[in-house]
Amino acid sequence: MELFNKLGAEIEVRWRDQNYDETVFPEIAASALKEANIPALVSAWEVIEWTMRQTVLPEQKDLPGRFGDPPITIYNSPRFHVDVYFWLEGTTSIHQHAFCGAFQVLMGSSIHSWYEFERQESINVFTEIGNMDLKLCEILSVGDVQMIQSGKKYIHGLFHLEQPSATIVVRTYKSPLHMPQFSYFKPYLAIDPFFEEANTTKKLQCVTALIRAKHPRTDEFITDWLKTADFQTTFQILSTLRDYLRSNEIDQLFNLSAAQNRFDAFIEIVRERHGERANVFPKVFAHLEKQDEIVRQRSYVTEPEHRFFLALLMNVEGRDRIFSLIKARFPAAEPLDKVLDWAFDLAQTRVLGQNVPNALGVNDFDDTDLSILENLLQDKTIDQIQTILETDYGSGKVEDLAERIEKLQKAVILQPLLQNF
Image (cartoon, rainbow, N blue to C red; front, side, top):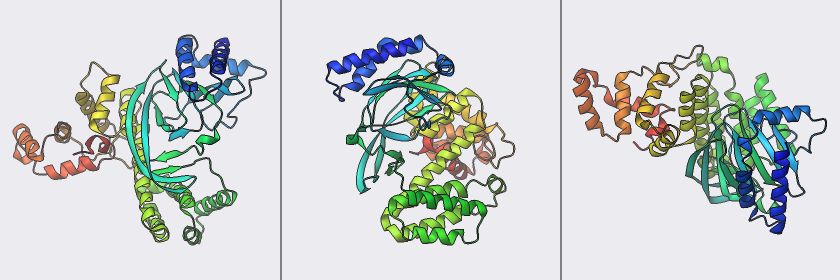
């Protein structure tokens, strides 16, 4: 790992010459990473091999492994350190940083999304309501380097396309000037995920125990708490409820669970407590539900191109953005043709043991539906689509055109492509 030590020493000298000015550290770190070009010289697995062979490792900066699976610290300096993060899960949350530096892709590739958050209201130091806007989306490959800016200048998310992936990270320690380090929940909410309060933590543990034990007074206890909880704690409660009320896979399989109605009842209690502010919660959880549905569909497929397609739909909204990323990944292909091929393939992929019609999540998807999808993605009007289908299939095949279009629009997987129709 001498290359990492050389990298760290070079950054130390360059930054010291700039009087340890944090405003220039991202550029120094990014330039040093590009010059060192470690991904061309060292494999990610060599990092694991080195780690396993060491009797004494450098001081590990994220010992519990909160960010990375695992994170491995290779070089320490009094003001910064160099880590390698491995990723076995597909995605990070959308987040900002209370530190600065740069990262470089060591293994795999990622969809990198960069956001702006316009704050509308500050609930408290740890919670904000506002509007999120995606300003950049790109594919990062091995060797690519990104600067990490502190605070809200760099709100981003990464979806790692291969498993595992790995990144080299050069970063400072946390700066009080850029705390808290928010995570963002589309479309409206910013929350400090590191905030902990002992009473809330312990009560949430009790709530999960009550739900898992199916205690008869569970909803009574939750209701009483929601009636007095602050806005930030309410989000924590609702997030916990959502996770546990949806966790009974047998109920979901046979459609016996009333979890959604139960959750909606809690939302009404929250509306009574927090008024208009509470309208944020259903929209945030609806977006999370869409993401989770695509994640579930992605777990049913193994073909790399299909997994790439579903990763795009989970992270990017809007046909033009999605098509541009497909073009970046497959420059010789026509994006529309790729989408139609993928949609057809997923519709033919049956999922055993799950309450879904296929990996596309659309009932009775046939050639007519595929043609309708193609025309929708070409901005054809309903009348134009009607004429095209009558020419291709005859009038008897398209009497249910409106119903078919509605079916496609309601499909969770297709919504990011059809959101402007």
